[in-house]
Length: 469
Image (cartoon, rainbow, N blue to C red; front, side):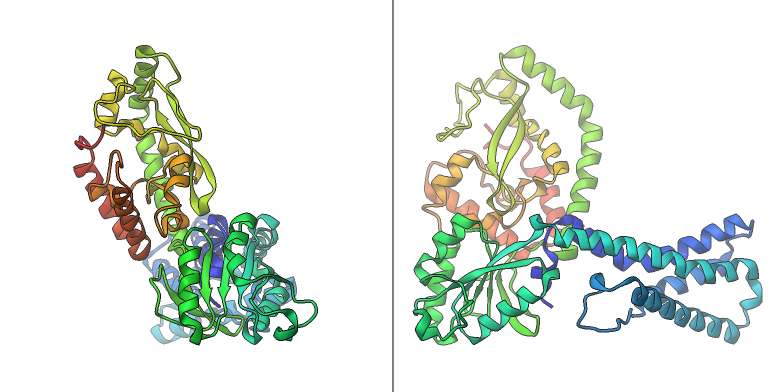
């Protein structure tokens, strides 16, 4: 199954999936440790070795399902319990075999081991049922369903749409098809919902906030597909081609299959599935640590801003976040104005609107500290494309191809563009184009190490940057 489509439905779904994968080894080891404590037995080196072995076995031994076509979250309690018990006693059998061969079985407390063998599967069943129910509720929450349309109505797209509609656990909702041919020429079933010709696809995607587009045009129409991809760059929709093709400027391209039909992710967020968990956990840990350390400084800055000029300490401005959704970004107020309308004037060098305290804050990027709150809210990340005012977004998306693709990831406090000198006022469109190029490069090459590199370079390059005014 293609991971980006099925797993990228929010941080919490990916987190629960991670917990499901870790539940067995963690439960088995934790139960063994707690039973040693309860019975007053020493958690000796022998128990340490047993803990390592059981963790490896529970993590590596596959959990076989009654019917591989049925997702585990749809199973009933009895099959799940049977599966857990069978798997657990296979593991116990392997451990007993190892103990018999090595002659170390006599070094363990029989009371601890027997209690552990009996209690662990009961706890595993309970924990898996709880996580399964949490996952079920998340997946079937209407707010998690991704809206899908097809570009091209043919045998392949109709088959894939039918399978998606029959698989409710995917969290995908098919809205219809776009094709230039009339219903009579298509020969599609009467229930097929044709939304219009292909030229109307882009406007429909924007109006109805479509999340996923499957391009199912024949490969001989490669030029038409390329043109369609160019037009869709002004949206935040994830785009997949059916079947595979590699002639485009792709972002996080991956091949895979969805319900038995091959697809290619042509434009997708890098933070799908477990990658999203890694990114979010890193953001929470770093942002919490910095906020804790910087709290006294932030209080002092807020007092200075209020004391030296009229107005609030914090400046709030509407900007675009993940998938082009509007968010409110926090900064320390550095100007005498609070612009957030249809027209927002960029700060210039020696701008008379900047206060004395504000000039110092902007010089050392201290005005950005409140955005750590945005990070904890999940609206921003530590690293990513810088968010622009809504007015600027609407201006530049019209003149820069692919501008909106930068919203496939959460906006960041710092980014690849900023450490490469793209900061300050953008007088010419070419300057913004350069920023967008770096943002798209970040999407293509993202890794945790790249984020760490950008954070380190931010400290050395941006603090006191001459373009910070």
